[in-house]
Picture 1 (cartoon, one colour):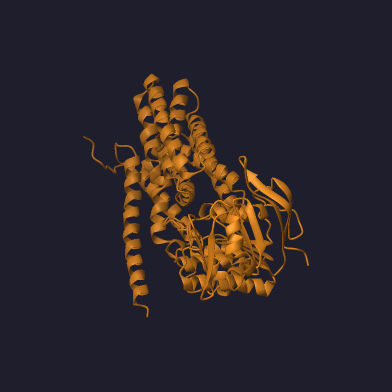
Picture 2 (picture 1 turned 90 degrees about the vertical axis):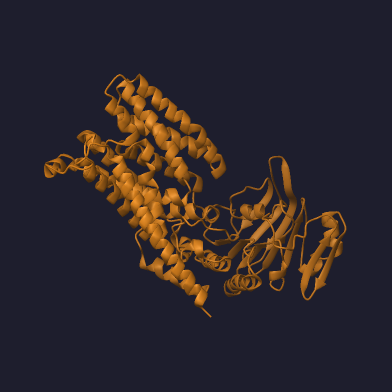
Length: 264
Length: 284
């Protein structure tokens, strides 16, 4: 099977600053890769490179066997929750419909196939109860379920998630990650999951890419999320403590990034 | 003082303005539809800024004896492209508009001050004059309105996607930046025909108020658009019909009708939301 995402000696930077370099990484179909690191370490930019929105400054990248390109329909993208303004003229179901036909130009005549497909997606993420409500009035968890539905419209073999669990409560974090994991298993899809907090997805993660100021480490959570490795990455003393199957990172002078916080 | 209403010979008057009514209704349809995106893209202030430069363009055309509709289109296109190119982020955009707007208004006032013709023409551009629009102008305004309507329908889905959810639309390959400029051009064209009708100062009554009212009572994009178009058409056609029997310009009628519709929708929306909240609250 084709590798989902493959970086070869890749470097990325802009305005004279290198975010990371020498990155070699193969993400296989069905693999769940968590991308961790502090703000500004280039996690979101890495997703942008895969989406074809940000060219590498060096090295090679293939996405599902092809060079990265904009508008690749085989990639599903789930962003972080966003407060929608009351002046947003859409309902929950319209968010899902954007995934079905939102990129299509031409007269917006309703098609039965689109409507049925949208209804299936709404049912798949169990959002039928609130899909007809104004999008601006949805809770964070409701919005994120619908965004998963939107991202699954083309049954993508690759899912990119950018802090999809941020500011959700624990129950909704679990529900939304279960939906993402469900698609991964059903489709054998690869998942690149950018997050501040690895704990809600710790049981799902196969490997971790930990980025800190241009340095990085790739490996299983057990290999990477250790006091020794993180101290080396951060170049300061870091303690990694495991409590009740949760990982707590405590460091001198750096923010506790495992708590949901600002976006990278 | 002339009375606000005087409906003697009303039938004869209506037949005189039938082409204005058609142009007005068409403007209502386009304005109502564009308004939905103005709200979704948070552009009411841009509408105001564009209309001031459109006024300057029209006043300049009046001064040099050129076509007023063309002048107003040129003015608003320049404004819309400047706003679109310089202000991609909301904060930047608002400062660009804040800088452009007084300049445009000042320029327009200068042109009008230099204009030696009838003073009635001067204030028409600021406060509206649809009844005095002549037939070739009505044809031009209708043609522009139809072009905007067609273009808007063709980009409808990606434009709505990009307006509501810019990040995801970008990730999905929607040409967000291009669409934003296309929309600014369509907005500019709509503003310049609205300036001819309700005047530069009151364009918001057609491009913002109807959509804002519709959003109070609906969220289905199709329903919001239909309501917004209906509200705008009722405001402008109602305004023209009422203004016929009066000696004052049409704009106060248009703005009052559209404001009244907004108040009613606000009331309805408020009640609905209260009921819905009570509903949710009573769930076990």
